[in-house]
Amino acid sequence: MTTAKNLAQRLARPELLDLQIYQSARRIGGQGDIWINANESPFNNSSLEGVNRYPECQPSALIDAYSRYSGVANNCILTGRGADEAIEILIRTFCTPAQDAIATFGPTYGMYAISAKTANVAVTALQLTDDFQLPSDYASQLDDCAYNANTKIVFICNPNNPTGSVIAKAELIKVIDSNPERIIVVDEAYIEFSPEYSVADLVESRANLVVLRTLSKAFALAGARCGFLLANPDIIDMCMRVIAPYPVPLPVSDLAVKALSPQGLLTMQSQVDDMSQQGLRLAHALQAYGATVVNAHGNYVLAQFSDKTTVQQKLTQAGVIARSYSDSRLADSIRFSFSNRSQTDYLISLFSASN
Ligand code: PMP
Image (tube, rainbow, N blue to C red):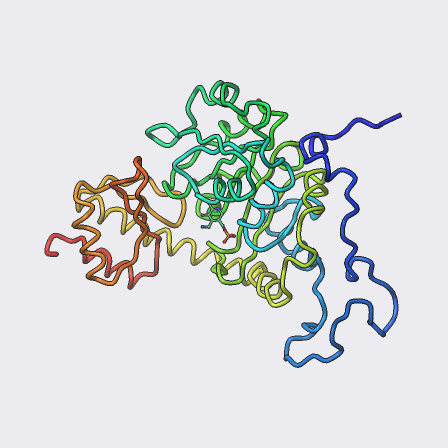
């Protein structure tokens, strides 16, 4: 008798189901003092203890620390090289090249489409409404698109990059619950700036929900490359078949565990509060200048200008590098990341009446 497949098994690329996962020396492990099973060096030439040895695939101290912080159970957490690696793993786990598709709601973070296209996976590019909400007929748009049943993953970025807009939790729950045979990925890279919108508390009860997180934004560790995929254990199990054997370098997990310590969390929270305040000041200055500003829920504000070329020249002359967009819906817009007080003062002075 064959047992019924769970959702993750039904949606995964079929060849993963009986894949014998790579048995790294670290995974096989053992008891004893003489470790000669991984072709490592016995010499440690660094002050960092253990760096001559391969790290754990999923460093337990890091998983424990993220579990304490997020309130999500250890067996529902996968860590790797940033949320970007999680996006790629999801596509490689669930989408068969030249057959399956992902769906996105633009304008949004560009890496969903790039990761898909580099894997020869199609992109159903749907559009958010004028006020950056899900279109009311998104379900029929998904059903009617060329890939319909082959649209395995729907990416929703919340708060959305680059608009800074948010979708209400109740709306997200509707999407999750009305698409039981698709993976709904909610990318919460910026959630520390609007924590009340998080759906991470639902990963244990929803078989099709994946939440992406990162230490690159609020935790100030973009250079370390550390992110998290939160999902039920069936999805984690499938993704573990695809992830690299040692995705988290030892110095990175050390840095990340410190950032997630009680002291690290206090630092993060006070910096988030400070950046949010500076961002509000900047948004007001941009509005006073005449820009149309989207209500910001991340650590950036999207501003639309009637004189974008002039603004760009002004910024360039002042040595300010902000993010300008060329795609049609954002052609007049510039995204400003929030910064510290002194840089915000400087930016505000550029947009004040006398400049
Ligand atoms: N998701 C969103 C919405 C982002 O803006 C970014 C980074 N720009 C990422 C994911 C990638 O984050 P990480 O640095 O963890 O790879």
